[in-house]
Image (cartoon, rainbow, N blue to C red; front, side, top):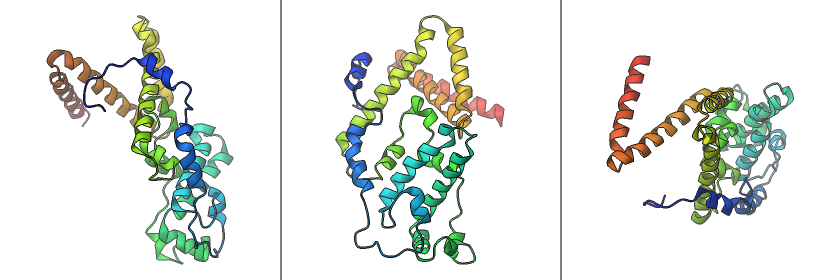
Length: 269
């Protein structure tokens, strides 16, 4: 956000990042390696068992940042939206990864687990487990990081970027700005391509294509509400832009848009 109008040449902007990796490894790779090597100095000690640590592929003395990063990496790998909902083995692995993370990301649960293993986490053994109910694996991932199937529409969320580097404080402001710039350019290029048929006058084909895309997205975890939200955001952005031709700031159009939203909510209530 420059705080002012700026001239944008989308093809030129895209050319400037074409040779950059989609995962932005050139910016984040070094930090990710640091996090993967992270451990709690002098606190390795003895643990009752390593079952949850083995699931997340971390050492028993791993830093919380390393645990969060491994959860993000592995959960994405085995997520039903990526491997398919019929892959039973991957689905079980995905659930195990979520269970392991929920134990190891909680300092009290982790301490109890290190001391007594999984047996020590049963409700009849400790009050800690009673206050930390397990969250559904898909719900947990969606709440923290969104859905990979929506990446062409929203890009990589800031929470996902943060998790990919274990919430490391070593991401500079300059790197953060560059990441956001790349995200916006990639999304703008994909949006322009999605609008090509409409702009060319083939509106019927464009509508069919968009409806098909929306239908597929709705099949993802929390897909329907996300499709609704993205639609409203794009709609509001368009209204604001078109309204700028009327008043220079878009307020009249936004006001009418808000009135329509209120009317729709009243009808559905």
